[in-house]
Image (cartoon, rainbow, N blue to C red; front, side, top):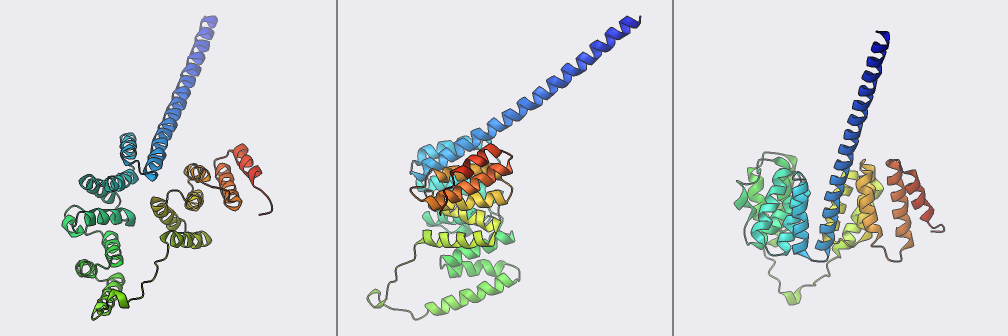
Length: 305
């Protein structure tokens, strides 16, 4: 009888061990699946950005649509689709994607800016979409005023301000619009009499802004500005570096590493920039606990710079 009980105990222990190992294996497999899934999305997304940068819009669109199938929650994909459709002169599709993006994230200045750009290309006003976007959302309306003011569409911006509740922002921009309209009165000067100044290079403006934000360690503004800069200039390594620094600082080292490695491939004979990338990559790999990779990039840093 005692031997029988002993056998039962051994069998029970073995069954518990097998179940535990099986469960652990299942959890491990699930983790690997999710990691592979994430990699699949990221690979498709960055390949789409690459195709977009070389103006291969059809292929970029197909890849972004693949990203949508993998993860419908990423509204940045809708933003990228809107931009590609716009460049491909598919205005209806561009408008639809831009609407999805801004409705998913009404606070996002660049999503709204893209929607305004799409409407401008169709010779239409953003006001025609007031029933399709949350015009009662304060940050959205403030962003819209900023965009329209920047485009010198003073009357349109003014009409939106009138519908907003009282605030310092409203008072400030009502005054700015009034001053701008006064300056435009009686300025009937022929082009021959004007001194046409060469406009400053927008890329240099982005660089200066990012350098200031890096010094101030303004992480949120750094991410937003670097993303905007990369939209316009996807082949500039410094913009990838700025975004990588911001992502590391915001606790997203895995994404930072991907961005930095993409930018590193674009560097041409700039040892100082290479060193910056190596240091930040070493920082990223240290943050995820990969000391061998971190040491590898530290060893690549060239002294004397």
